[in-house]
Figure (cartoon, rainbow, N blue to C red):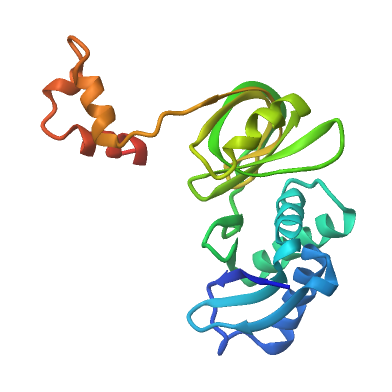
Length: 243
């Protein structure tokens, strides 16, 4: 059976600094969080920070990644949710941050450095909206089926009817799509918005074009302010980064 590697990067320490007993405590919680014990194996701790490298059977990788993400939103099996909470507590006590990453570098779950000053939480609440992404996985046998979208390194697990899933079948690993529907959102104590659920009502394809092509189309609009900018791409990147 083919294998895949996933990494739990512990930032703020190194293999030479992190005591073996404490590492064992982290690995214990990671084992519970991942589940599927016969298909997850610890390989090594790499140099630099302290990336714990785990090897999983390829067939089980999507199930394990979905389990980790659902535990982050306090959903899924109780043992996974508890293990996730234990990891958060341990990282906070040790003053570490951490990230779960797939073999391709895709961010699965983030555990930012806890601060003493917590932000006010909001939600959860339902809101109409849309999600963009590439369809990477469809599956299930229930009336409502899971749809996995990936966008800029983040993975979203949505719900859709069988009719919607049939429409998305030919689009797996194809051009990005825009999914319209209703989502349940929550802002955590770190000020990050987390999606708990998203029910897809309709989908549409997105045109693949470069930023330069998009700017050219905007410049073609009469009286558009972008026409007067010397470097519109740089200005758009500044807006995106919050400058």
